Amino acid sequence: MSLYTEQIAAEWINDRLDLYNLAVSLGDLPWQQQILASLRDKDELIRQEIDRVVRRSLWERFDQINSRLVSIYQQIRGMNSSEESLQLREKAWELKQERVLVGKKLRRQGK
Image 1 (cartoon, rainbow, N blue to C red):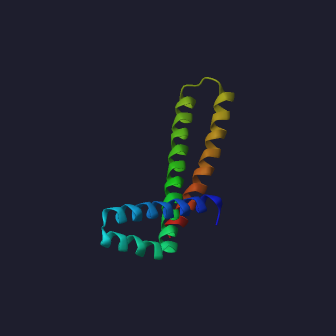
Image 2 (cartoon, helix red, strand yellow; image 1 turned 90 degrees about the horizontal axis):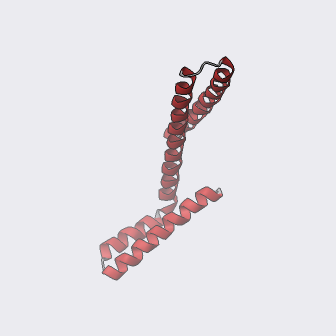
Image 3 (cartoon, rainbow, N blue to C red; image 1 turned 60 degrees about the horizontal axis):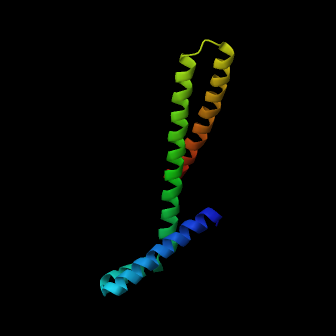
């Protein structure tokens, strides 16, 4: 498990323990039992949470790349210098390649 996934797992467990303590202080026995059941199934639930966080992170990166591409294309349209335009086109190409990689990771996450 990577440091990132360990952090997600630790936060998930700490959140459930905090909720359990709240349920105890409120005297809500059904809620306590529900939380204990989720802690028993923690491996699967933590895996689902990690998948959700990773997927969200990948979509955020995908959106950032798209925003940068739009900005670059707007700059290219307003340029007179072909040298600067070429540099921006090269940067756009790199971003497109990165977007393809992120897209592949998203497809793998979806399976």
